[in-house]
Image (cartoon, rainbow, N blue to C red; front, side, top):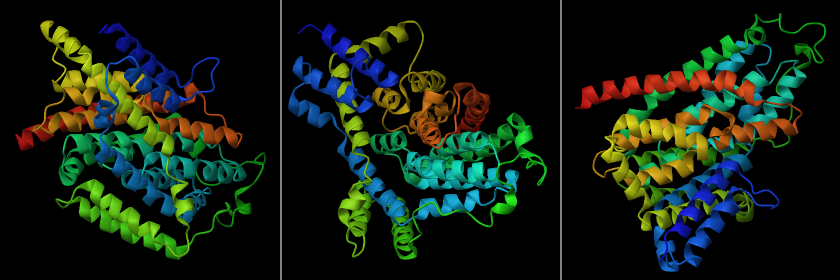
Length: 423
């Protein structure tokens, strides 16, 4: 069969996913990816059976299970409660910034970073505007810290889950390789925010002048944001999450451990299973499945292998760590990190985990470079707009560009040191 339709479908799908829409049509990234997957079957590049086999179901099941765990915390009011307590530090901006970066990073390492941004953004906007503070630097810190924190663990974000599952990486080894750059990255976010917005972080009491719409004295504690903390459901979620993370350090397949945790959470006398499943991001799961099929279609057409061979003839090896990291950064900012990782994992060797760690770190940290580099950034911006707070492309670049460059530089330094220690 002619192979050019496959190339056209792939290019159109990835461009559509990068842009996020098609002019004249009410279709988003998920719809575009799904159309691309369907077209791969319609043109005969792959069969329906091959399309189903292309989906990495262990990754999908792990992603699904962790969404159920996250739903437990959302329904228990835990995210809103934590965000409210952090926002309650509005009288002390520097302390608020440090607490926000720390809490959002830790939560992002344990649950999906997108959910953390979704829960924290409206709470921050309301509380900080009430306190007469500019929410923008804090929102930028939230987006950057959640991305960096999610890089530390296999379960921190969707692309890490995929890398961990397909690369058969161990949870503890991944943590050893990826946590140090994440920890340093959080310090970088703190420093860059302070230097980028010096007027926002003056000494306590100086920031709130007579013109502030709501002086800090009006904040006796975090305001009520609608969902009360359910201590029982939150404790249940914490206990099961701790047990789940402990299971990740064993030989039990991660998707099996995740599904067991999800089953325990669904067996609730108080929270209806429909409510829990209502917080599962079926759009993201569909996007994942569709991209698996699209990437398999282009691989079946032989295009990636031909491109790698052409580069090799010119002395460029995609498997080398510097080239892999550079390509991951570029692709992650062109088409987002999840599609970029799906395209690149086919070029990584099994048995050598280092390239997989490099791909996980560079693709995730690259998400901070520009506003459209990660879904977490877009969630923060969209949620803030609904609260009347505008975060511009330039404002994000003011923090995102230096944070990305510094964290990537340290990442390469750390990789060199780690290779020296382990090699």
